[in-house]
Image 1 (spheres, rainbow, N blue to C red):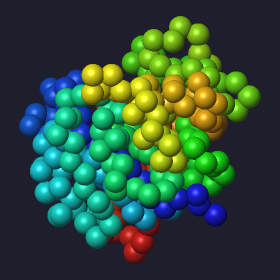
Image 2: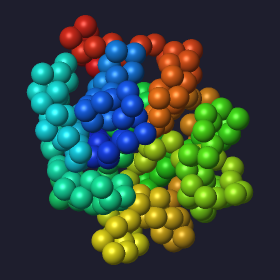
Image 3: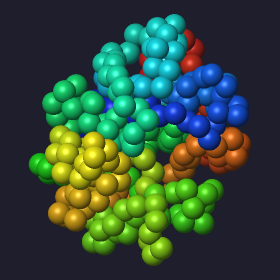
Length: 253
């Protein structure tokens, strides 16, 4: 049984490192294998069992909504949330979704491509009240840009530390979480001068033994922040997963 059928997708950022190829397009609409990144994320989430989406937009959000209205996914139930402070860290984007969810949800990034089986496995994990679970990758030698990755220290099934600047670590954050609404309280607790990152909130939960680790094992995924990462994703993911079928080509997902 799935723990949740709702996904929150953060799609508000500026995506400046992809701007040389995206032009005026917002990052969620940059194409990978001819399909917008956001469509990849939504389609793969639906294959994993997600039925409803909460999508947080910001930079060029009107373009994202315009694309969706004409996309193969246009009939999927979506609650749109606008983050007017999209220039701030991603924790602020997630806080904007607080009123749109009232239970456990899958948290995804609009620029992280993943195997649907990974999301399905995470959605089947039991989740205690006030907990969150982070999908982690222990295959450190497969990470394309470790300097850019958010590193994780795990112990006994829990995340102990999380952050980009860790020098000792045994896993990497894949950008996929199973969350209870407790994550919003954690972000409120770490907010400074009206700003906070998702990792700040997750470190708060980890410090209180409320953040568990879920090993994705052999699964592949890729964060797409730069043109080089986009090129690498074409090699990394095509070797392990089939191309996402456009929804007009299949009867259901």
